[in-house]
Image (cartoon, rainbow, N blue to C red):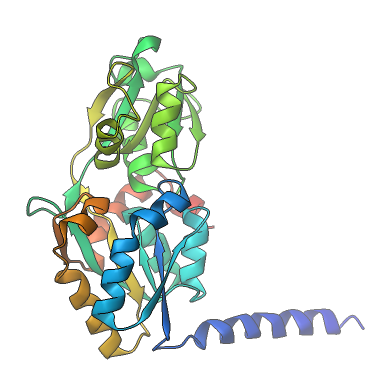
Length: 286
């Protein structure tokens, strides 16, 4: 009987591989994943306009999906459980290392396809600049997030601060949760996307009387949309065209963008390089 266990294990691995390889190149319903940057119900509700537009433009039914975290979204793409995904730059590079996917569009604002992250501080705690973060609690979003982990951590490293030695790091899941943690004093500082932070302020969810921006990062490539490389060529072309031709301000408002520009894999080499500098590559890819 002992020989059965390794045999069954091998068969299970082969079965899983075959399931991934058997993905439909022209699915009747496109499964489109959105980043879990905020509450899932809110994300889906805010993107109903996008869903309606894509269904009409592509000529297929869509199912919007918001996974529990970045890692589960990466795994869903890896095993072909989603067809198109809206990734952060870091989570895209991680997904690309595991799945046969290709980026095709990136957010564009004011003619640029770059964005910044911010490190914010709680005013009442006396955190006025990044150096004041020493000895404090710092909130990050998801470990696989670019602007609520990778970039702000690199900004603090440039200021001579390392996690564990100079500050205590806490991962709270989403960008809005980072901002709330800092505002409520559960963390004295935190890092998140600058556009998301500004949106939270505009919506009066975060008060500049309680929270201040300590530092703004240099520009990084914008969030990419990526699709399975094995989709039918005609379908891939329809998907690309739908995003490039999207001009509806009401739909684009959810992305804080004016439109979508073409994106290529090499655009995200700068993110891969930064992850290696911070020794996040292997730790996040397990």
